[in-house]
Amino acid sequence: MTIERSNSERTVRMAGEYFQRDRNLQPPAYTPTYKTSVTRSPQKALLSLEQSLSELTGPVFNHNDLGPLDHDMILNYAKDGEPIGQRIIVHGRVIDESGHGVPNTLVEAWQANAGGRYRHKKDTYLAPIDPNFGGCGRCLTDDEGYYFFRTIKPGPYPWRNYVNSWRPAHIHLSVFGPSFTQRLITQMYFEGDPLIDICPIVKTIPDEDAIKRLVAPLDLNASIPLDCRAYKFDIVLRGRRSTLFENRLEGN
Image (cartoon, rainbow, N blue to C red; front, side, top):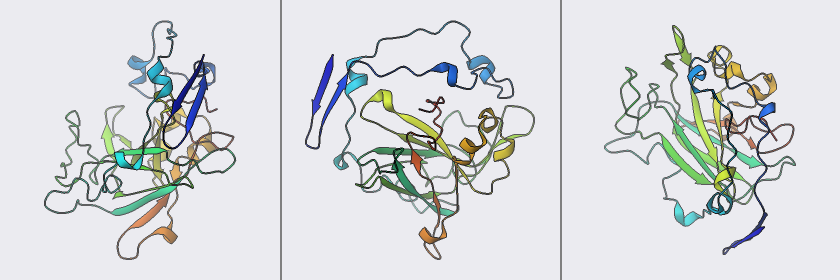
């Protein structure tokens, strides 16, 4: 079966379903040092479900779907002032294995505030909620695959893995392809954070080079003096230098 979808920008042709991921190449779902994987890991054989038409053909995004402050997490939730914390810029390119930019790709970001607390009803960490910080943003890559967010540097936070477990500061990033089944999710860490090396979640990744590709270096050339520091994080979709994605751990 071939599916055709036309819009003002392009026509997408897809034959049949997408390839299923090879789960034999993934790290084990059961990882006792990552405590919640004990109950989250499958206990029975997995089922293979046929992909639906909506999974194969949508969504499609354009600039009309985004608000003017969607990429600016310093201002997009501000009520009576700006949020507390270190002001930063996160920027980079979404690129393929050949280094070519991937244009018109939706990049979403979500994170904790400067104190390490998410704006979520199940987050009960003692750090206060910042009334002027929502912690969510999104943008579309330009013609060269470039994206950027302005935000507050998130703080680390404790979690109930084992005694005194802390997650390093991080930002969650999602990249949408031409369909729902091609949504990729990863986490970006910050250069120099000592918690990265001892995080049980990070340590489930066996490839040290893959971990390094999740760490964004400080980029003073893109920083704004007396305002924002910048961190550069390229998202590589395929190839030997591809970014590790949480929902596609096998790589390519």
